[in-house]
Image 1: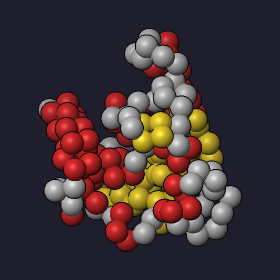
Image 2: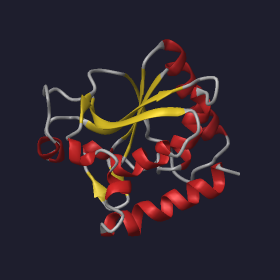
Image 3: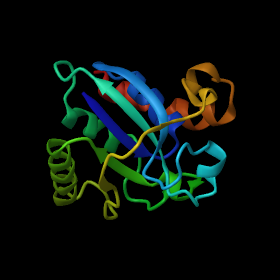
Image 4: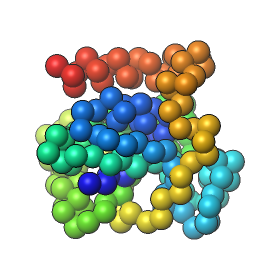
Length: 171
C-alpha cells in the first residue's frame, strides 16, 4: 500500500515514518506542482507549487491508513498555512495526497473528527488532494536525519520531535 503526506520539511517526516512499524519504505520528494523534475532549489522558491512530501510504502496488516493519519496529524501542526515552525512557504503546506477513494474518505473523515473534538485551538488547514506525479528528491535528502545527526536543524528540531513520537507511539 502507498501513502503520501506533506507536513513541512521532509527531513522531519521521513525519520518519523522510518520509525513506524509496518512502514517498509519512506522516500522524500515533491508532489502537487506544475514543473516536471523539480529540483530542491526550484521548489524552495515557491514558484513550482510543489510540496515537500514523503511517499510511504506500508504493510496494511501491520499498520493501517488511519494509524498513519494519526501519526501524521500528531507529528506536525495542521493549523498553520504554508508553514511548519520556522519553515515558511507553500512547499511546507500541510496536505494528504490520496491514492484512492478510500484514502480520500478516511482523510476527510479523520479531519472532521479532529475538528469536532476541538483537538486544535485553530482550524485545520490540511488539504486533501489527489496524488499526482511523485518526484523523488535529490539523493542528499534521503535518510537525512540519520546521516547528519550533527546538523543543528537535526539536533534542535528533529531529534526532540522524534523522541516525543517514540515515547508516545512506541508504548
